[in-house]
Image 1 (cartoon, rainbow, N blue to C red):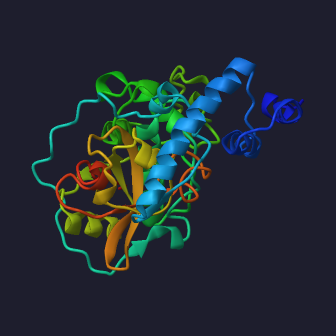
Image 2 (tube, helix red, strand yellow; image 1 turned 120 degrees about the horizontal axis):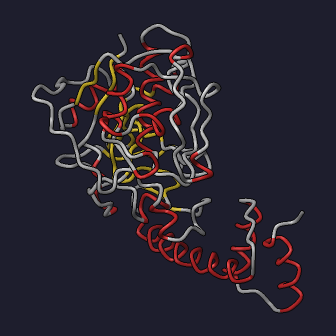
Length: 326
């Protein structure tokens, strides 16, 4: 069955001469396999698309370090987009008394080039479960670095089970370190044994943890000092979980290049992701960050954020942690 968007192309083309922007939206809808249920929804989605087009044009006219472009989120309403921000309004844990501090020993590292350490980019869907994906991905990475074969683990377990005393709230948000508290006493299950469903429903389900199918515990977790050298050094040990400000147009429409402090990305964190490397380009150091919005967002699911002082670009310096696998 054809989607409304595809059927509309023929009818609108016959009825009127489309504007350049209308034609661009038609192509967008087809490219992203959008299926709108009514003319009213089609019009609302077009309005959302136009708003993002305006930002993209403004951003690219600045000719800064990164390029903006449309992605599958361009027709989302503000409410739909913000539903994916799983750190908004979440209370932080008190800073650890003894944070990891060190200086980097290399000129950069990209863990994507080391077999097994970085698992495929995932899609959290319409659930504020970014914290669970960030927690799971860092466990996956450090499990491999501990000498094990790659295993795709289950964020749904954390969404459903690491609640209550663990201070997480399913699709309503949480923190990766609280998720690791759950894994100190309960093992991470595999995605195959505990499939992710909340991305479609937008809701958590009843905890279905099965200890017999668990893979690994987390023995502890470590907070990293909020300075660039320590963050780089921690990433050299393995990928780390980080928090960023993503509920803004800079992050939403990122396509390629390096987001710098000049781009105006806020620092009030609302989204959890994973830093999988750091490097330098034309004298600008940056972090390589993996998102959980599928490969159709950003640069195949990744974004480069410039290193910086204070809270960091998009707030990335503030909440850097990694799990310890015994």
